[in-house]
Image 1 (cartoon, rainbow, N blue to C red):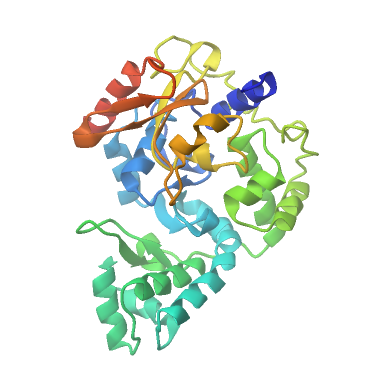
Image 2: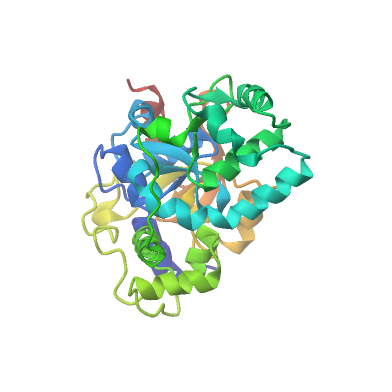
Length: 358
């Protein structure tokens, strides 16, 4: 049973997440910055996540932002791969990277990797994107014995320290790049941790309100105590009973007041209502808070998150998850929780436009 309080929280969060699609063809880097990171282990799903939040963008626009390096794939919140605006790396990486260094070091020992762990940096320097196999060959030349996941964890360790990023996919897998080579500059970490923490809290709340420090901890992977400190540093007030921080409700436009008016589900509902959206697997809307209850009824939770690390693509209506969907062979198939479910024809057409537009 979803109550009235959940309705308020759900609509506010959906708007903060831009599911009312207030902007027409924004710069992709600006859209990513607004999130402030987009899960991108699967680049096709990440592109669809961006599509759900802005009108008129295309796959080609997302590809162009990657090509001009205004956005990059990096190990971000929770130690998972995200799209991040390149100019946000200096303050974000020193916060979210260090908690996962020890995990990478432990995995390297488990994988039996020997040799200098920092050799991955000179192995990549001046050589452009390398696949895992190519990087492994370079590491062997430098005296590092590593294979398979050992190579990945070497790259992850260097990425936590701002030295490595993910490059373009090749042959169905990722490539690794020397960060300074790729960006044309070193990633100079923000020396003032308090300033970075305050920025993290402000950015998070702008795209997730209503929320509290516990939600920031779940999203970022940082300790709860540090997230509470970030909240205080950003002067975000005391989270209320629903997690909403006093005065910080995303009113810079994420409340829907500037959303487009209309009834077409792909263009945003009247008064900025989110309408029907088809969100990809592992979308931020299902990952951004400690509790999915306000947006996903408990009786349907297992159909979205059956376990085993799976988080399915979802259908939402005004922010409420009402079903799942998939796209075998490029054809959208919807599985509503309560048939017939909402009319998703406009969204289906928009996905076709997004994936085929030049």
